[in-house]
Length: 116
Length: 113
Image (cartoon, rainbow over all chains, first blue to last red; front, side, top):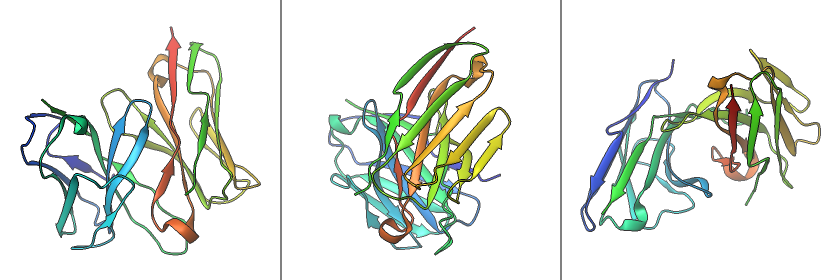
């Protein structure tokens, strides 16, 4: 079974702090994704990565950055946390086979971040 | 970009009833996925569909990839209390989105014992 783990289930930070959310997958997947989930807004893509050291902006990248130094690890960074970044953050990974449409994304358990 | 309309937004049913939910789009999709999310957890993949017209079952769950490639439905038969959660559809358009999935907004299912 694919396993995607996230460093924390719950996190409380203060406004202005730098926050690191870590995600690790154990299935050698090329693709990794960070989403945030808010009531009534569904899942929104923040950033994704096709390969080590590669990153692409998603739909809501403002206020976030990412790092992918190793294939199995994808970090989401909040440079200066703000209260409107209080949310559930979900990491996912997938093995994408070009031209086939195969893209089953597997999710971690989520990190519920509260910014005070 | 692509948008998925998922309905209903919420359902309240009695244990033992069958459930049906669907997603529609104005765009053609190459792949449809259905996920379930338990409270406080990440979504878990239930069923993946890759061909128009494909009908796939996973236990009491059945999902179909619409013939027009613009819709998909998920049925749950003989619901039980542990079916409670949020169900999401997700679609992939190969030509324009690479590996990015488009998600529906979810159907919140409540099952009364």
